[in-house]
Image (cartoon, rainbow, N blue to C red; front, side, top):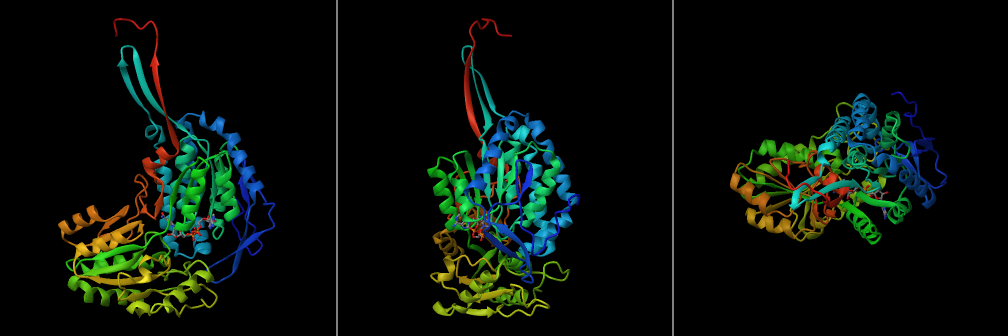
Length: 499
Ligand code: NAD
């Protein structure tokens, strides 16, 4: 790293990056950030107030006129450099992700790769942002549409992908000519602070990219600020609803990705060993803290026994520990409160006939006494009306259900309130086709366990997993971060002969 700001300690108070300057927050209210693997204090996040957010918004607003008038081909040049800097500093960024978020180093590197892919996709803006032109819509009259940026836009991000999720939006926003503000989750402020140290090296005009920290007051200040034109939110459904409603009431564009409860269906004809390995990775990878984690595995017909035995083995043999250690498959959950919430939810399961098949509540983790560990947990026999069915636990807890036929499974899935992802494991093309056609979810996997769209595709949640119409990533992001302007043009003295 070229910057020395990477080292963190219990004294580190993360800073804002506003108008091209690092600034200490004026707020005395802070949240203590812990390393979830050992409970050590690694930083403090300032919980900014309205005035601090206002400073950032004004800085972004001041930068807007100059930035939007720069040619698109010039606006993407800093993104090429950012991709290079992020690749060169991948180890430092991945280590920071693991240290504050808990996932394994391999998972952190995977997340970072997804962030960089979005930078690459956004570099297509000179083409992706092109307009449309119709010559001679009437004699001597032409009509065309151009895309223009919106102004100041902002991202409000969750804790579980501190590097990737801001990049579903940020590179597209600035490539399209907007200026931008990122507010990371107050629980994982260090990764974006580190990435902004790289952004500082891009020599962007001051105010084009800004970083602010905080919790609800900071979010509400962004939502209520008249100079903010668009909000991208990712987090839990209840907050997504609040953000969507407040942004819309203020006349802002909003795209709000919410929570999930993702079913994966195991057909009896599938390759059981492969399906089990993939479902275990989906359910327990990132300690189950992925919005695309499999949380309900549904076996159909006589595949039940084969799958239950295999998934039990897969869960029991997963190595839990500090994500920085080489031989670890799964790290801790984000906070002690999360671990306690999950532990209580597991303890309350007896109601409704469900039973624990694998109990991860007392994991044996070397040196992990102070960490927030919960080992993979499997609950079998969940009835369609069990309270767990509609409840996002967001931890390494997989529920098992059993149905007689696929038609009933699809009806069951479609009764659910979320629609982030649904997957099927099968060798039967017709079953796969009926599933992907009939299931009400925005991201579908066929023999895939985490159906995470690549950067050129929209991250397509449905129902209570998404509020808005244009999603993050790809062409949807270009449309979200631009407004169309249509021009109908007639020039007098048009020659009667057209060459
Ligand atoms: P969260 O909703 O608690 O927080 C998300 C953001 O909202 C944070 O920046 C936080 O500061 C802010 N916030 C929290 N409470 C708020 C309030 N009352 N008012 C205004 N702002 C508030 O979510 P989280 O725990 O950080 O992340 C986990 C959730 O995110 C899960 O539900 C997960 O499914 C979801 N998620 C969804 C996707 C997706 O693409 N659909 C991706 C990742 C995570």
